[in-house]
Length: 172
Image (cartoon, rainbow, N blue to C red; front, side, top):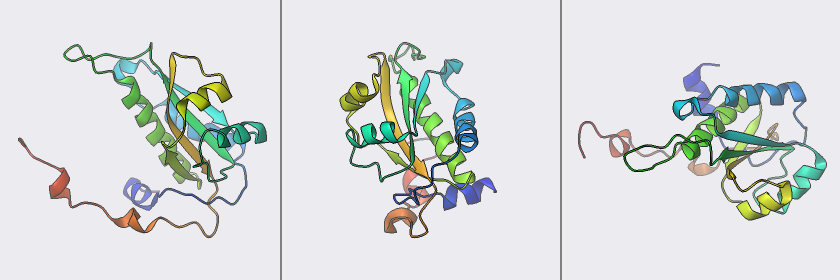
């Protein structure tokens, strides 16, 4: 699939047909996240794959936005493995994990899976349910599976601001 077509056609899937992606498909999605760029190549991402009945039931205690997906990936980052900008102390790890999540999401779409990037979850409940150490910070939840035949993008999916409102050349 051409990249422009891929990014235009991908949407947040909130209804899945229940089929669980097999291990080879999950591995291809994870491989895309594995090669994502990170600040100074520190690779602080940690991805928790939730694809068993037990782990998906635990997930439901942490978020209402699970959409009964047959698989999920909790993208986290190691707070101790981050490049830090010397001028203001900004850390790259949260951005790195977001880039990894984007790679996972786009790879899933290319492979015929639907996904939805979820930020509405309780990080403390995630920590408790999945025994996540304190140095590992949950950032994004990617629920995924095969889209249900009735799955459609939300009406606002096609609404994008004009480019001249979001892009500035040279100065503000």
